[in-house]
Length: 131
Image (cartoon, rainbow, N blue to C red; front, side, top):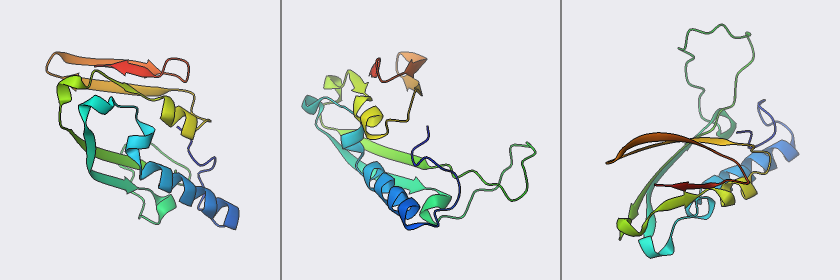
């Protein structure tokens, strides 16, 4: 997913504004993920990290050779939600996320639950993932 449109450090005012806008959107996960209101979900925790946000880049320990002086500006977003009536939660709709970040073409979703695991590729046209 390309959220800001660039990977370099934000140096111009326009780049800094774009990074701030993306961070603000990511800080509101309940607006990005369509969850059933009947499930009564609320956010418990969130963690956003990226060199774009001023965080130190993580060490590259995947064994790949990369160009010196070039770093990827990945954004890590981790959310923990609690739902009052989780049995009412039957799917997640990623349409709001696709709308917020229109350059996103697909999202690969990995689901792990009591009935097993599965992988699903979502697109703007097919954004709902059933649990």
